[in-house]
Image: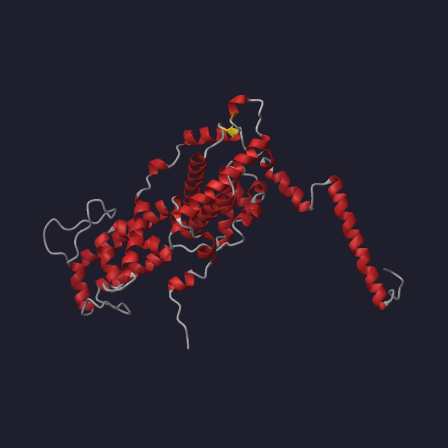
Length: 387
């Protein structure tokens, strides 16, 4: 028997679901452990002679967990603005933002400051999403040496657990737009709704929908007078789509939405904030009112909408606030990661140089000689007498 998988089934097979989906509690626990580990490491290299840095064994002048989180958020916003400045496709922006957010689940800004990492994740996302820009051109446009872009790349890949796929809600939102427009024009297609009597009934229901609340983020408003017509419904749908896209480009990338919810839940939450009556209508075409899953799905969408609505642009650090935190960070960051370019060069050479490099060379030579001897024992020496 052929098994048909829906979008949710396919999503559950993805690395994003398996490795990068959390409950709020598990996400908070992971971040706390990462920060505590970074503080423990800081206690080993911070200048203890400066008593102002230390109190009961705790580095009081190091960034706390909240400050680290806000600094990362500031550079998530930098990822967005840089991508928009380059006019890259939206998948590059969303992918880079998730790479940065994922990186800082297992790494702390105390070890790897975001101002050094965000440039790398942007270029990595550019390659992942098949948006061509040479390294030299990218480095020139962000006024950064090319080796500084590449130096943290392997560390980023490790933190990402070599999973580069990022499932995003943009295509799904576009699909909802097309379905709603078809419904408004009387083309039902595969949409089935047990509560209606076909295309005409769905059209009539759309014309009779309540207007969005004053708090809705859509720019559409009903006519001051006169009957709502089909064209008005089309305008309403497009306005809701535009508002939802703005939410996906902002709060969805700057909050924990991708870690806590699926792409379909995120897009429906964004549409809910844009135009709740229209979203409820759309869900009725998908979920019968007597469905056992309906309450759980609606509750999840509402929770995601609450998270997105809680975000405000005022939460993002100002330029001066960012500079103050980064100055504070310099006093307690891990000195072993200050020269990522040098560390990357050493790694490419295969070691730290000196005695370690000689030891590795000696082992390689011994292994090669052993391999040749085993070959001679099995087949005899080569005919020309050379090993």
